[in-house]
Each structure stands twice: as structure tokens, then as C-alpha cells.
Image (cartoon, rainbow, N blue to C red):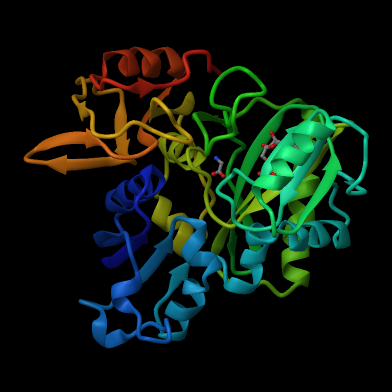
Length: 376
Ligand code: AMP
Ligand code: GLY
């Protein structure tokens, strides 16, 4: 097979997916497509005439085009896609839809509290795509009201606060079964301070060591998720991300995303031994290298609210480290920072974070910021 593949999106996750597809024996050309609008007609349907060539497969990276129904539109135009359809994308775009899917299928999640509850800490969750900013753990009414005011006009709910270790599990729905990747751990907070802002992720690694009870219960959860999707007649090939917390001796779902996590995807693909496209197209099971796949996010100072942009970036040489660009632009052969999350640096090793932190230290970029505390 020599497939012409489009990867939709423009972050480090999509760069990593593109690179994994390029390594595959099944691909011929792999294009990164940042913006689909040039290929749509005035009704936002795919206009085949506008495509420079017809891809054999379109792999969707971020949630926005998936939640906008682009998978359905490309499929309707006869083009095969990897991505969840619009009906099921509500698992990410509506936390209330996700809550009822979870509860109706006997899956565990944090219990809902009345809006006026004074049981603190508690968690406020806004219903909609908020890029990780619509959730906050609050400790008193003042914090609760201040956060609620930020999202005036949006629906929200309150749930009990659960305490425990979190993991991210990426699954791929392939023709009636779930193919599950090994759990990853994502460092979501901006710093080691548990009250620091939530970010998309400052680093990740996989696999995560689980106790035998945790592994048994994870397998039970994943079977339940598979049955829930099949009972609901999910018919797509796409990724589903379970954000799980170990609390009260079981896995509780904190969130679903309808895509691979960023930076979890980079850690998983760094650790993956077999052909990623073969998994996607032929449904083979993932196999892994020895050691740990890890990724460290190089952000810009001021991230997540007001990142400083425009710094020249000079990267050191280190054959052990792979660098994926996120918020980077190239001008006259030089690289400049152009976003909050600037680079994803990845390696696979028995002890990956010292290698990544050493590399991060040597990157020249005036306003770089990364977490020095994270480790496996
Ligand atoms: P979410 O986008 O729902 O995953 O929430 C983002 C982060 O907020 C999670 O990774 C948790 O660290 C935290 N969080 C969300 N819901 C809860 C909860 N019920 N209890 C404790 N922490 C939570
Ligand atoms: N790393 C968290 C996410 O992708 O949502």
C-alpha cells in the first residue's frame, strides 16, 4: 500500500502523528493540513473540486474540526477518516452528555453536587469546548463565584472533588473493538504547585506502573467502555481519551476527549515499536520498546494566558531527542517562538526526564519555560 495521508492540525501532536505515518511502510505522502476551510463550499461541506488531490486517509488531530463534524463531511464525500463522528464528539464538547453516557453505562465518575453546595473543595465544570480552562477545583464561595463569572452565560455543573493519581488512556475504536494504548501520565499544572493553572500538559510519560488491582480494574473499565460504545452503535474509526483518577479503590472518569492527548500522544508514539499506520488501518495491537517514552513541553514565559512570542530558538544537537514544533514559525531559515506551547521534546529511555531536562536547559530561547520537577 502507498497511501496519501492528510494529518489535520498544526501542533506537536500532529507533527508526531505525521512523523509516525512517514515511517510507515503503508504511506507514500503525508501532508499536514492546518486549515480545512479552503476545501469547503459555502455550506461547509467538502468540495471535492477544491481538493488539490484526493487523500486516501484523513487523520484528525485536534477536537475542534471533529466537534464541527468534519469527519462526517469527509466521509460523506467518500474519503476515509480516522476521527470520531460528530454525534459521539459530544463526549468532549458537552460534559453533561459525557456524564449521562458514563452514568447510563455503569461507569464510575464523580457525583454531581447541587449548584449551591457548600461542600468544599468542589469542582466547577463548564459545558463546552474550553481548551482545558473550563474546569476548576474551588475551595470556597469566593473562588467559586469568581470562576463562575468568567463563563457567564454558559451551562455548568458542580461535582465532588476526588483525590488520587491520574492517568490518561488512549483507545482506538476499530471495527467493533477497542485497541487500547498503555496508560500515560500527563502533568497538567503549570508548575508543581497544585493551585497553579491547568494547561494542556507540561509533559507526559508512558507506561505508568500500576498495581495489579489497578490493572485489573482498568481492564474492567475498558471493557465497559467498549460495550458502551458498541451498545450506542458507535461506527467510526477514531480515538477516545479517558482521563481517569484512582479514588476509593477504583478508576473514576474525570473526562473524555475525542482525540489523542497532547502531549500524551508524543510520549506514546516515542515508545511505540510497531507501525502506527498498521494499527490504524489493519487493527494490529500496539507493541512497545523497552524503557519509557517521555515528552517535555517547552513553553513561553507567560503561558497559558499571555505567552511572550518572537524569541529566536536555537536547538542543541542530541541524537537521543526528537523535537516536534508547536508554536514555532520559520523566517529566513531561523526558528522563532510563536505561541504558548512552543516545542515538544521527546525521548525513549529507562530514565528519560534527566535527558530531556538537560536538553531543555541547552535550548537557546530567551523566554523559555518548562517544568524542572517532573519525573517518572
Ligand atoms: P478535566 O478537564 O475534567 O479532566 O479536568 C481537568 C483537571 O481538573 C483534571 O485532570 C483533574 O486534575 C482536575 N479535576 C477534574 N475533575 C475533578 C474531580 N472531580 N476531582 C478532582 N479533580 C478533578
Ligand atoms: N493532555 C491533555 C489533553 O490533551 O487534553
